[in-house]
Length: 452
Image 1 (cartoon, rainbow, N blue to C red):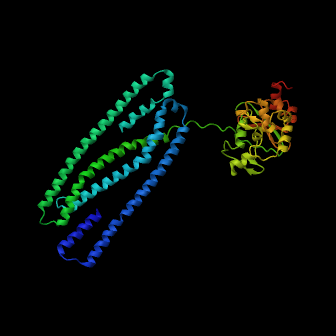
Image 2: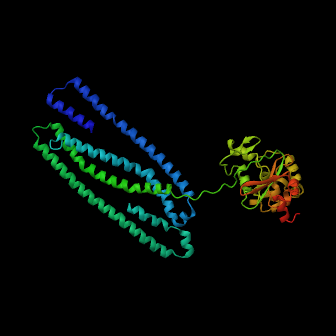
């Protein structure tokens, strides 16, 4: 707009003087170039807006996902799956790809309309969301497996068509009202053009011809500016529903925080010591194992192995130094040797020595291909005990062993017994010392198990 006004002034100079002044022409040209250069500011503003929208989408998605995952089960019982999917797909897509253009278009129309009225006023003496709501019910009814299982295909087709009809009615009314609005705005724009033109003709003797042309030109743009402003503003208001929905899911009521599975644990297990951990179901035995492998991270405190905080090293380095023999061991499809030494770190002699200490040397020697014997998926061609022993790659004579014991008699010869209750250590000591105390928990557990 400023460039157009300046160009009109430049044109007026040429008409009034009749001759060209070189210095004045250069001055006019330089100022006009400066006005044109201000477009770079708007380009920079658009780039900043794109960056802001992108970051906002990332934050919205992260907050919404965290909020939904921490919601109580009652939320999932009362909220259709299709509605949740709609929030993470359609609404986020609108926020990411469409809302930016609606905001930019709306602002552009506002400034264009303001500029039109300013130009006319300065140079004329006298002036100195419903389809989105119905769409959720359509998504809700998409569940092919459930529909097929209950044989309700025809019922759901009819229900889907009814909901689709309601959605299309809203869409049709939206288009009809938009057309009527365009007609009204065109009529209003025509009135503005007529008034501006009549005023320009009435004051033709006092107005500069260049500015008369500018007024008429900008009055012609009022219609489009008003039409696009109302259209983009209504679209912006409609798309903003997605932002409201996403914000609603970002502030869902959260489920009550769980108690820590292990709290206040503090103990030290020297190298080469055999430690047996016992306790009732839910005492926190498995949580200790998961914490050692950093499958769950500690909220406070530290876990040190060889005076190294395990949270300060990489997962690969940590887990490669630990060995676990699970209650239900898993073997992979391939050779026995590959399962025993997946990283190919040991020689055949070391593997045979390990098998001998695990009492599996005779069994493996009798196999057709010995170490190259083919293991089926999950180790189904081995017994559970053999699968468990196969997970032992090296002897435990010089290792610290931590055993989650379900049977007390399996840890009676260990160096230390740790008894857990509600995630805390309630008793610790050597088995012999604990058995000497008839009031100890370990003594009572052995008595209940019939070992005393």
